[in-house]
Amino acid sequence: MKTTIDVSTKLTRMIQTRAVLLLVTTSVIPLPAQVLTTLHSFDGSDGSNPGEALVQALNGGLYGVAPFGGVDNQGTLFRITPSGNFAILKFCAQNDCADETPSAPLIQGTRGDLYGTADTAIFKTTPDGATTTVYAFDDICPTNEGYLEPGLSCGIMESQDGNFYGTIPGAGIRNKLTECFDGGPCGAIMKITPEGTVSIVYEFCPSPFFCGDGWAPTAPLVQTSDGTLYGITLYGGEQCYSNGCGTVFQLTQNRTPTTLHSFCVDNNSCPDGAFPIALILGTDGDLYGLTSDQHGTVFKITTAGVLTTLHTFDGTDGSFPVGLLQARNGNFYGTTEAGGAYSSGTVFEMTPGGSLTTLYSFCSAGSTCPDGSAPYGGLVQNTDGNFYGTTSMGGASNDGTVFKLSVDLAPFVMTLLTAGEVGERVEILGTNLSGSTSVTFNGTAASFSVISKSLIVATIPAGASSGEIQVITPAGKLSSKSAYIVLP
Image 1: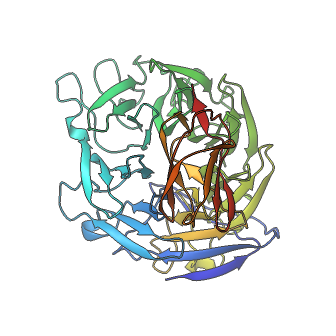
Image 2: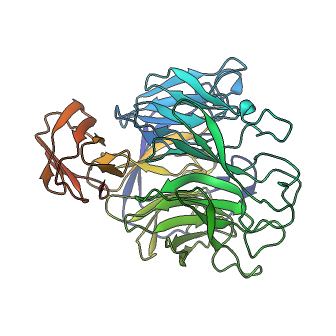
């Protein structure tokens, strides 16, 4: 089902997929018109309560997961086109399904397959939905010294070294030395080879009494061009001695974490926020993220650990921010799962300086919420320039929706990895690429092949330097979303 709603303002109500209901009353502030289109309403049979961001695949389609619904309520893997053509790729009807109860966002791998995590396994799937198990969590530590509990993975990312790295917030190798304050496991960072060999890179909270390095790492890791990984923990840190308030950490090439920032130095007011839940790399080389305490904040932190709070939510402009991305125009866009004009969640835009505007408030038609509510999964900017996302509730059957939000941004191209060496092949993803006549790396012409209307494969040319990738198509010039780094 597809409905279109023209909007000047509209905001939200929330329910976290995992728990608590929060209502916030607010006033309506007129905004410039945006257009939100509901592309699909889930009805349970095709999935329910989607709570993860979508990903644009090499074939141009958008892919996502719903943790519930489908056969035996085990969740579904789905594909939807920008025009709203929806297809279920996988039902899990057996006990050993690799994608049973998917628990983290999918990623597009450079080898063409999509990768994801579920309660029991890391899995990969072809664009057509053929799913196989990369690694079963039950097998990670089969000794008496400890074990890795399945589930609760916060997702994986593909590194420049060709391996995948993932965070597991609610589980780790449990033994006598790694008990958190509540007696539970403290979390871990894992490395997964393309062949499926898994190893623990780091286990958080080595002390049973003080987790200065944090515990419960949340959100996928991010990587800078020098290979350094960065991440966040939901709890722990140097300033909190009970449940803790969370950290931002750095993982260098030797894969030893360094805490860059511990949140909430003042346990009473927490001016820098507390309990971080998202982290991304900005085009300026700094890191940007979200905290979830009180109504939540947006922060910026340099790789040297200098943190600046850019915006503090107050409920009227949203509560509990859950997703953040930087768009082609340099501004940041994200969602809150609660707050706003209707207490059902918002979509917001923020400048790099911290000026925030609410673009849309969900649940504009009272309790029926045809446009959805509680957008728990964040946004993806498709190469057509539009934003796509999911709501975990609302829609025709109150099982959630897939939506598109148009704010008149121009189309662009992007690469799956942000850095490479001369002679390496680079996959360039875009829209309407058929008939392209030129590809350049910061002005240096490259050899290339048009694979499909959504994919070009180019070779980094000799003499290329870091900068924009540009593609000349029959419709005009397309520039890359961010600068591509040509490594020595």
